Image (cartoon, rainbow, N blue to C red):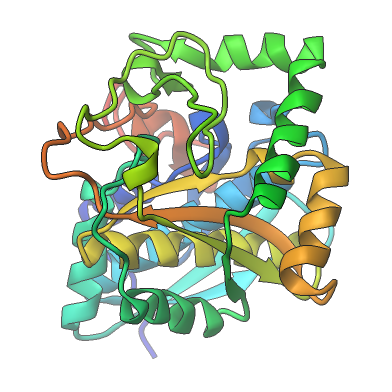
Length: 335
């Protein structure tokens, strides 16, 4: 039987969309390798944020997001992906191998792929329009098919106290602070969190955002925190090993793209999960110690007068994608 595999132009288009996935501090900690009949995803440990993400959980979740983005992009182009996670026990950084077969793209495939280019991390206050239960149900159903549990989190005073504790733990860590300054407040870089995409932290917000350096994004004057009707969702897995974290990243991508396709704005919330003590508390409070929280997602409607957010920058595709033998897949500077 003849092996089916897309041409280089299709692979490049899919991987270009895959690298639009969100990642911790926009570190893009993944490497893609293109074989003769398969695609391969590797973790790039050189991009680990050692003080933000000491156990590399964020790194693996980020890699899961690019994996799912890739699968979505290929599906819209007429290719069904079969994913083999952690295919080689001797190579723990080899996170996935993907084999492909032809299929007919459906409306959902196209809608999710189209959402990739539109998705932004919107750290501003959301508007007063409520999120409908059916939108949450759609996200929950899709992540459940990946073996990941979704829970709605009530942003009570107790929750804010837990989040504030994590922020204080980071504020008192000089190594974390130095790393944060290195990775945020950027104005013309291909990695890191751009200043133009980060607002000042507002303690009155239902879920105060991380304190990034050089915040330069304005809030809508007509959407103060008390009007914010967004919801906070938690994704959890029964295990906390590398496969569970990879799956959580795939589910994060699925939830984000589902929300974006339905017109909703989204923001990932990971800081409270990066401190061991507060993550343990949330495991008990949200999942009754039955699941490990892997990601929190704020979902809501952007205010009608909110300015569109620019896309965060990405490294040239040629820096993140090579052939399996190490030779270049695209020309220098190709994006």
